[in-house]
Each structure stands twice: as C-alpha cells, then as structure tokens.
Length: 286
Image (cartoon, rainbow, N blue to C red):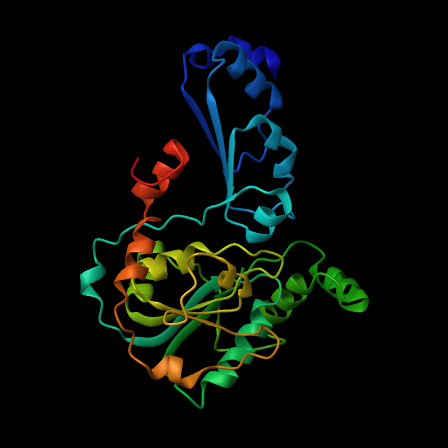
C-alpha cells in the first residue's frame, strides 16, 4: 500500500485540506505521506456511522478536526457534533399532503415489531398513513437450517423476521418485497404531513430521512430519544415515542404545524451547501 501511495502522482500535488467522510478503510500511511509533503495541511473527518459499527476512532489522531453525527460518540470521544446534511427538493412546492403519516424503510433489527406496535396505537387516531417495510425477498442457502438454529438460540432476530415474512409464516400489510425508487420515496415524503422515524437501536445519530423531513418543514415522530440533546430539538416539530411501548400524541398529530422562523433558519445551516462550509472552514458561511 505504501508503494501505491508514493507512486500516485495525484497525491504528490500540494493540498491545503484533506476532508474524509467515514473512511472505513483508509491506510494510516496516507495521512503520514500527505503530511510529509504538505506540513500545514488541515485534516478533517466526518462520520455518519457509529463507532459501535466501525472503529473510526483508530484514526482520530490523524485529524485536526473531527465531526460525528452520533451523539454518543461525540460525548465519549470529546469530538464535535454535526448531523447529516439535507438537500433542497426542487419539487417541494408541488406537495399534495395525501398522507397524515408515512414511513418507508428497510428491515433491520426490531423495526417490524416496532412498526406493528406503532400502527396499533395509530389506528384509533388516524388510518391515513402510508407505512411500508421493505424486506429482501432473497434468502441465503440453508435458510431453513439457519432459521431453526437462530430461533433455538434466540439470536439473529432480523434474519428470523425476514425468513418468516418471505416464507409467509407471518403476513403483514406493512411489508413489501420490492425496493422503492428514490423519486417515489421523495414523492411520498413530500406528500406527507408527518414522517415516522425508527433508528437502529444502537445508534444515536439523526437519520438522513429525519434531516430531509425537517428541512422540508415536516413534523417527526421518532424513537430516537437522543434528539433532545441536539440543537435541532423542537417539540413543535418532533414527538418522541418509546420503541417498546409507543404512546402516540393525538394532539401532536392533529395540530397543524406553525411556521417557526428560528427553527427554519437553524435547519438552513445544515443544507448541503452550508453544511460543507463547516467541513471546509469550521463554521457556516465563513
């Protein structure tokens, strides 16, 4: 790897900054080599995954500034908090608000169980929702044997759920077996008044779905309790529920959202163009 880095002509160019997003498999020698050629180079890292999934912290020593979307990583490693960016939607003015609440997401961890609990609590309040869980219809070889072993030892719950749904052991109107094109996903988001957000239980960062929805002025119902510790928390826009025993606030659902200029300005600072200013300059619009 060192020989490849040294022989790469592009890396011999003079650089002012190195900006790394996630960097799952960056060779540490790359930092040392760039520093040797550019002694004053500023190195910046942003991660939108958690250290509980990848050991990002192993390379922290090579960076001058470090940002993470994960609030627990920010507290643990004393680094800077920066949520994921959102992108303005050119079709935003064309929304029809077909749905009171919507959710489209892939199957992972306990999402299927959480969605079922939420829908059961939603029904007395509204049935105007579009909630779909995308399940991969393909299964690996020896699926039945794996299913029996995982079921016996009560592990790999995600696979157990997938197997039961694919094999029609469990049926649900919430499940679909085809992926949703991005333009359709964006249309559903635009046409919804409230967006349901269910994060992975081991992460504290705000999902891209949540950031896009907040940027578009939508209300959020989320299982992510850590949002209260971020600068973005506003009870006008965000309602927090428990993933085990979700209590749905009917008033939050039925109350029309009031425009909040302060909150809108705050969200503007995380729109992609201004978000990149943070990585480049350390603050918005410098």
